[in-house]
Length: 189
Ligand code: AMP
Image (cartoon, rainbow, N blue to C red; front, side, top):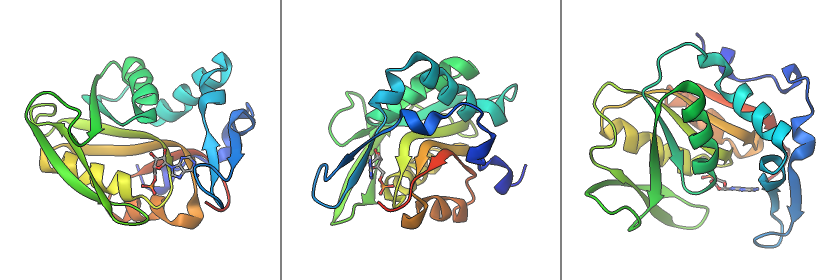
């Protein structure tokens, strides 16, 4: 499968999933258009459609783990893990996980932060799908991919409901050799 083949053309989704995402201007700070997926999650048909569409390229293939990025990636990732009959692995902000962790620094708009995962969460060679609600600059996903690769994971794909392509995150992740699947795009940031 080519990288391009798993980038979902938004037009192929018959149901208008994009209409179920709410946009909040100037949140959390002026100039940001916050893409709020709680309205999508709260609508049964939209939630099911999003999960079905995200996993569609891997229906029937073996996925060992779905790794979800805190916090909205937990909701989507948990549902995907159930759908593909895999385990679920939380990737959390520093200091939240109780057992021994591995960590990775990742770039924010201003500065950096640290994400962590349990050291024994993934065995070398396991096939993993990374999940978050939205990809913007790709800094968070890049950190998560480096963290997963550190444990020997084979990253099958990175899945997002929303891509903000002008910020270049999806292109950055594809350049790391990871196919990106996103269900819709929004202009701007
Ligand atoms: P980035 O690391 O820049 O790709 O940012 C991705 C993370 O920030 C995801 O966990 C998103 O939930 C959050 N995020 C960034 N921009 C937005 C936005 N415009 N609306 C909602 N969430 C956002």
